Length: 386
Picture (spheres, rainbow, N blue to C red):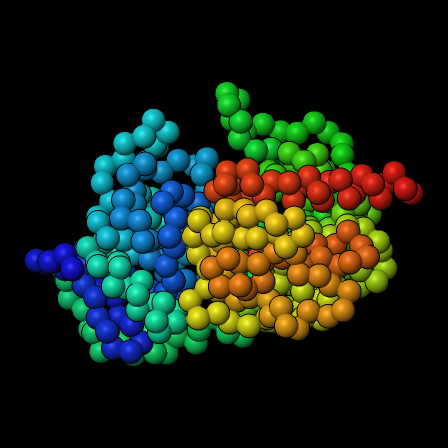
């Protein structure tokens, strides 16, 4: 473990384990669940992914901050993850796109960073013990009340039973036009028109909305608490269920009745990602369970059970759909090749499907974009048959 002469940050686990390191970003203290992410790139996208609400992220890749910060890479307006743990302190950025430094960006947005840890040791602890509750503190004076930090970690209620989608969703509905980044234009807006898609924002990433627009959809985003009446008032041709944080069973208290009513009253295609996948599974009668340490990374192999194809995917989830509870009429379409957990479902008799992973994150890089095209095609086929 790197030797810290004058530590300015402290990480306290609920079991009493203490780590010291160098703090950067904001000062202060936060409590959260601790997870690890194995991605080699995309630290800014990870920190701004609403699915990380209530979590501190340990990055297993040691070189974090070396490409700086650029607003184009934000998945939402500000960081949502509570903090970050890295092996080496962030270096000065070296990338032509960089418009700022990671420590400055974190400080301006109230998020704590900590470097100088043995992240392999921390990752092994997470894998063996499950995602722990932690308190993370940054104090330039290096003074920490360790007992108080451990007590704060132990007092953290955890994510089970916690509905965080309400905290990260949009305040009101809005339209989305921006498409995926492409050289040399960058981000551009789609042409007017296209099938009307209502996207429910449980913590939607911007690049998901861009993929829907790039697939030709005319996207209207509604808050997580939208009712079936709100959805149907838009006269949608399709319904999209976004990613998001927290316990799916808690969010399902209001999301599941909406999805069930839309399915009962219409035959429109439905597509879900991540938390949206879990919401759809709950609406169809399955159950979700908390994982030991979850899946967080950009190198997760997923097998399409219907084609035999293996996709390299990006994942971020601490809960999973229990495939043993899938009802008749619902097929399991994808599984994780790491642990066999469920990664996709579809209704056998309707164009209603979802995946646990993030096809918009492009780690493959284009392995999974076909899912957006499949959704758009299902809408077009239904419109053609009408």
